[in-house]
Length: 146
View 1 (cartoon, helix red, strand yellow):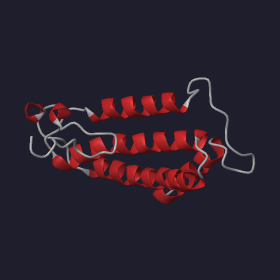
View 2 (view 1 turned 90 degrees about the vertical axis):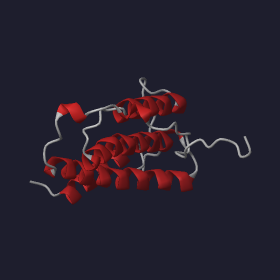
View 3 (view 1 turned 60 degrees about the horizontal axis):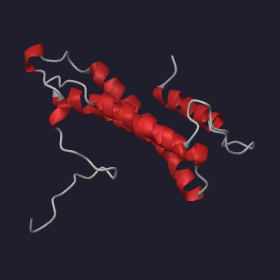
View 4 (view 1 turned 30 degrees about the horizontal axis):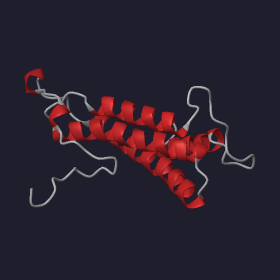
């Protein structure tokens, strides 16, 4: 059975090949995701839906369950940057995001698998009451003095 490290390395290689980062240059956009905006919109919508899972009542389980789709969203956005972006600094950052976030997803998935069962269903509620977040990930503060 391959180790987590070898699985992550294999995934990183697959991303590099799939996004055309090898000698052939940038990959062409697919018909399903024909623009940067479409890829980003899809990544955000998918991430937002997945993060709205009901609470289990277990902070560790809920943290991992919400962070996994958050990290996957970052990966999906980084893939869009690799597919459409031109700035070498941002492309290198996107590559790092893909590798690091995938590694962290593996850690969180393994932790979820090792946690004891979730509490009874009567302790469950939705995460829908979370504060609104801006694109930068910071809570939207109210203006001072208002």
